[in-house]
Length: 384
Image 1 (cartoon, rainbow, N blue to C red):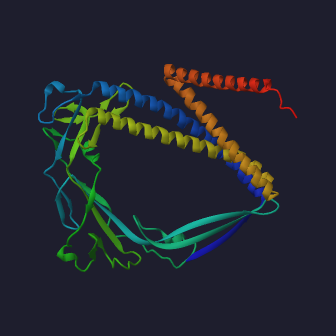
Image 2: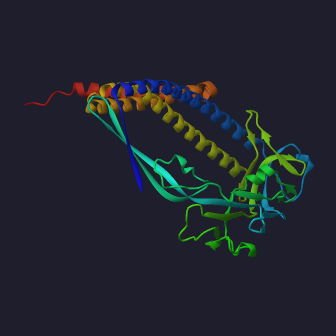
Image 3: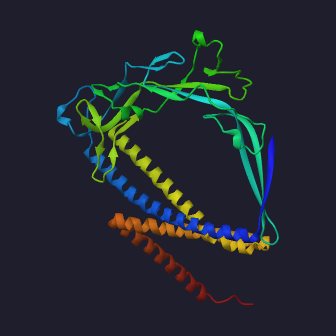
């Protein structure tokens, strides 16, 4: 099932839109600059904080609470335990676990669109948009009133909602874990329903351990599905400030905070290494995001050039390709410059050192090329 819509825009209208896009491009450039500078500042803070916690942390036993460590950054590990029952009253579930989660889905019509643009002689542009409709399990009801094609009514409302039930008291040896630490116990495994409450026999059926309000093999619009997962107690490693028989957040000299829980019996060094790895992934993700934002910004700023050249479509394509290359080179060059300057500002010794190394490398490359040119010039031409 599909619906096709064709729209056209003239050359002058496209020029106006591209000029408006220039303003948005300038905003994106500012955003990317701020993101890149903030990211490098944050990277320096992460490096200092992780070095600080590695130097200050004390590994202690979870078997007893030593008052001498009050207010200190401590590391300990062992099996996390709880006597609490996590519940779902609708399905009459009770389990001894850290967390019971359930995901409710509803079967709905979903509209997807795909657009293709075709340039016309004279600078105009034609856009063909195809809307397709499929039935899918989704996390929330889809409003079908704005669908381009009628006949795909989803109705409204739902009976079941997603949610979770979390234990309030989880211990690690002689210590109690705070709610924030408990929430970091994010591992889970599927929890398969074995039977429905007697009063529910007419409301649905089970398939693969999940509840279906309709027929699992052939669902209908507005049918609902509820599946469950369970987070059981496991061995954990904690790094936080010892506060009585529990833990609180550590605040570093840079202002960064740490209240850490990892699954498994990890040493203090392994916990710190985990934080270093997460910081590195975030740092490079934000660098990539900043470069992409800058690239899009330059594309929008240069867009009027290709639109002006679109009077002849092949010429517009050529100008557009050159603009994209220029935008890419500018984004990489400016981003690299900002990153280097940020390191010089936030970590002068290391930043200047890196800058000197780069200059030295460029000087050596230039010297080698000059020497090669001199050798080439001194070699006599071959005899005919």
